[in-house]
Length: 110
Length: 109
Picture 1 (tube, each protein chain N blue to C red):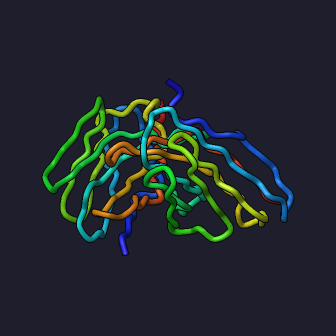
Picture 2: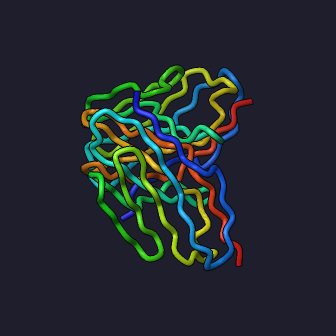
């Protein structure tokens, strides 16, 4: 069982480009989340999905979009990347109130 | 607004030197308080969930406790492999998780 996989592991992106971060889980959890982690600020919620077909905005949703076409996949899209979106991005899923995290994607926007 | 703060920001201990990490929170209707461990370059790993004041959970050298305003993560006789960042998070009923900034623990041999 892999748990949660994220791709790519890291990426350097030019400002203005479109980018999709991929997240797949094999635990059949209903709820999934996207966080960004920045030094000194901790993990901040970008978007979440309580079940397939539904999504919601977190604390810092601007510039990001998500979709949840099925239970396993929860991609995060940056429509037009800006340097302030340089961060480490973590996908998570939860069973009950316990969250399980993926290994992260390190994104640098130049 | 739900808030979580953690102290200290960083802590250096000698191997075997016990200490505690603090997590202070304000939340309307606590559903749970969570501790995670995060190693460099990796995602957070779940450690404990505490639900009500007075509750305690233990795992190896770690013990988490909870009051109505804060939680402590006690580390007894730490080893170098306990070096990591420890994250605290809270969840209110009907709300998403809110994370603190973490405490970076270094245990020196």
